[in-house]
Length: 366
Image (cartoon, rainbow, N blue to C red; front, side, top):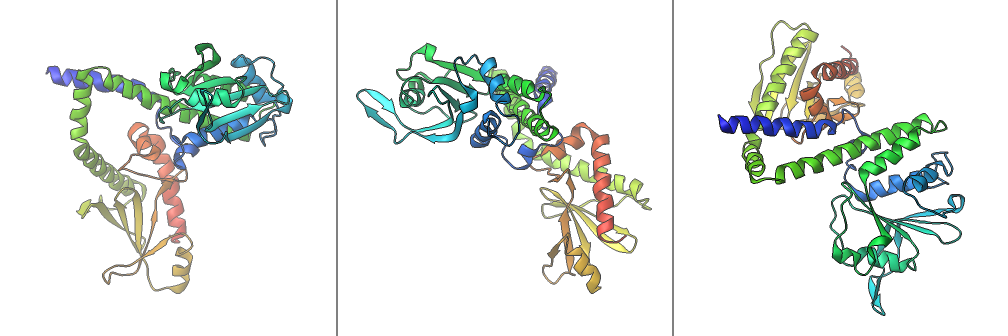
């Protein structure tokens, strides 16, 4: 009983932490870029650039300078470089120099801003000192992390404490809110920034969950106990989803019976005979549908615009395609945003799935 209570409390606390994780649709997640530091650096630098195609001129940079208290900087003349090459890492006269600065900003008077962006990468030897020395010790140095932590002593080297600033992605998010609140900010730019803020929320939630799990041996033991059953839990969810999906199709397509779900190797499958067409709905990692194609040449040509050909071991010629919601697959192995949407918001998932099913029927001319 005590262990069950501990697990309930563990899951409740973890669920609170993950409340911002896995939004229903996110461009950065869909492209696999949500945790790539270079992508984050490029996006932030793109907004800071007065010559950027956001059309805001110095507006976003002005807000950054104000929020992070950077004095005497001339934004109209700012030049911004992502991955600024400062030469080979080296030591000259007791000073460490060189390396690549994530975001380098400099005005016409050589006032300089250096942003070292850390999401998951470890600190490098003398990293902040090298960047500071490589900018003639005049730069405002920002050490950007998910939680605003301090850099390692080894990264700082001989740079004095007062010559760098620790900032968090929560503070970057506050700056982004300032940006979209500018009345001149266009809807396309606001859309992209909102997706980026959702990405930040998800990354911060992941970090908070990691901290929660590792803060005590009890939490670690509970997490490991859950991890040991991960494959069984995943298989259970996959089976529950396919049974739900079969029932949903019976209701939506007015089938006479609920299609029976069966296993074939690692796949969960059910077959539907609908309007003279035989369709297999299959779940491997992602949900896909498989259609037994007839020999009508015109129909086959039409299907090939949307579907992939499939034949194996002398089986009838078939075509297949992934079912997608908001441009992404429904993945019940790694559990992408669409899988979480079914777990968290079934009604919304059902509405979006019905749109995809309607498109599917249009493609096969039913």
